[in-house]
Image (cartoon, rainbow, N blue to C red; front, side, top):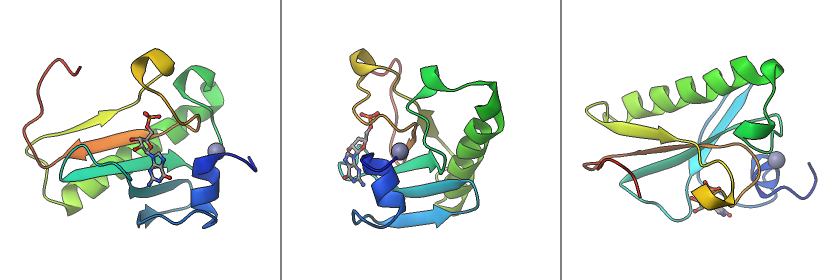
Length: 113
Ligand code: 5GP
Ligand code: ZN
């Protein structure tokens, strides 16, 4: 999508600290980190969010999570990390290109706020 912030980051039109890329997923540092590790993992295909995803996106959503797990392993934060999808404005979704937050490197409390 031409005007989507995360599509623009993926195309290199908006600078970001890229962490990982493969055929289907792209990962970069969150600009406002909520922990020592805060990485955003996105599908290369533009999907607005989880509630807009369809059965065709099943594998892609799984791939985003597996990319998160891979980064968590590389960063040695497997003693505790969280993958989060904020869905809808009331849950804090502010960018409407589906993204998995990978947050870790510190103690995480439950329930989240
Ligand atoms: P949401 O609130 O939609 O779940 O998550 C959006 C995330 O994108 C936020 O954590 C926010 O800090 C991050 N973000 C917003 N704009 C930018 C940007 O231009 N670059 C990067 N790297 N992250 C961004
Ligand atoms: Zn997009």
